[in-house]
Image (tube, rainbow, N blue to C red; front, side):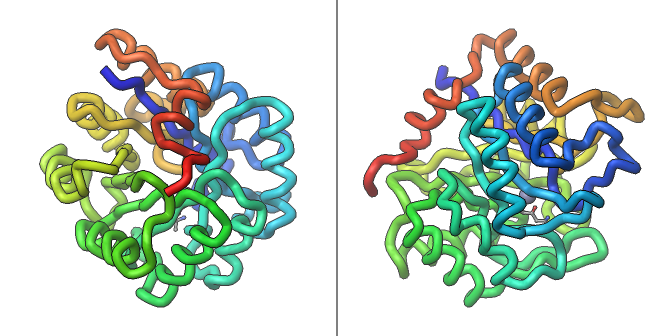
Length: 275
Ligand code: KMH
Ligand code: ZN
């Protein structure tokens, strides 16, 4: 069976230290967190950054500092966020692309997000996609609603590919958007091109374990971390992102599925290959 790529969303923009005291915030905390997650079996780090007071930012220099700290410790694939936090402008959100990370997230449509709206209209998506193409950054299409798949496919047909594969992340269980029931995941997986796609699944909050198990059963990959879920079991906070990674690595290993190293994940995702 294909090896499992575990992506860690270790920081996020919404989780605070008040609710998860082990949240990494500073550049060095993020670097240490990424290295521990890699040791536990993760291959990709989905990166958000914070100001010293914990507020989310898309500032290029804050990203650069976190990337330096990660790179000093580990070979994990770095995927910067272009989602940022609610209410940020497109220009703010685009800043980390200037650092030419290997990957970046790209949500292809507006979605309800709790009481807020995560805004991604057609012009914004087209701009973000073309900026990724120009910078040689592989998008991960972060899909919160089914129509966002159609939008991503439209970008590819209008502007051409952004790499030899399309990599998808189905983010299920955000209040206000698609729920985490396995039937949703099955529908979404059936809706992407069979050839030339790789995919992972993120279960938000209580959907973390159901989505993980459904994804493993369907042969997909898994995303997890404090951006998505702060608990280890019901009501018990996770001690670290690495603890969450280690559990999924163990579950996968017990089913005969080994975790991919960052190098193996680079090959599976064909990062660095021409289109
Ligand atoms: N913070 C959310 C509003 C992404 O990283 O691309 C959006 C988000 C998605 O986290
Ligand atoms: Zn994110």
